[in-house]
Image 1 (cartoon, helix red, strand yellow):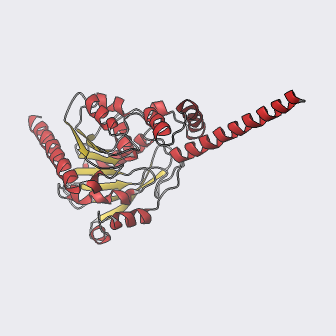
Image 2 (tube, one colour):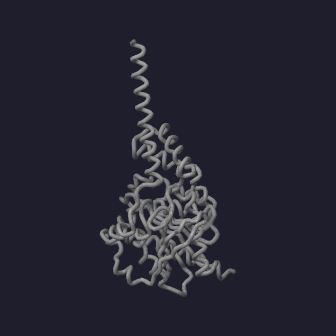
Image 3 (cartoon, helix red, strand yellow):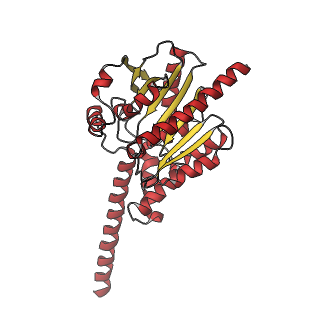
Length: 317
């Protein structure tokens, strides 16, 4: 009887443990790939509350809503701000996870001062764009390619197109460099260098869970439902091969994506213009809020280098 009781207790414990692992893994999978998103209105309210941009400024801009389709048939939404119809300079603003294009509007004045037209996009599964899962650049890089093609149709293949991404948007922008043909520069604010390393880091340091269990169980559900693998998202590999100018930005107190990842990306880039700026005291996605003047000054200096570089190239040709 004792052995039967022990067997029943053991079985009950194992069932409970399995159920807990399953539940936590499903939670992790959903958190990573399909967390509840903010609306454009909610994001705009945040931007205004933080005094990063105003609706009055936005309303005075010459703009239009753009809808394109990607290769999977998803409708992708964006807002195109064309203050300089005769300029061929366009910056594509790429927002972070759970946000929308309106969260990117904080950077409008910075780029308008440099004579750039602005395309602020909703990534797939965010804002008004179609999609169910986030893949951290694995599929999104092809969406970026469709936006780049849209810009080249408006401004020509010699247009000076840049990407400015934050967090997920930064990782997506760097991941895009695997297939880049027309983008001339990237500003990556708090990017991840490798998704597998990031997920392992977050499981261990943010959630205090055993990596050897939950990395593999969460990864299983990601592969099953979202159809991508963590190890296939490798921005640092793209950066190492890219020759276009890239600026890396990170807050020194970012616990969500460690600043070391920007250092690693900067060190991996062997060719072309590169710049690294660490915002002292800045938390995740807060470098701009932490030191707005420093942020704008550093990006402006980078843009001046970029424009000078392409001007010299054009003259040489």
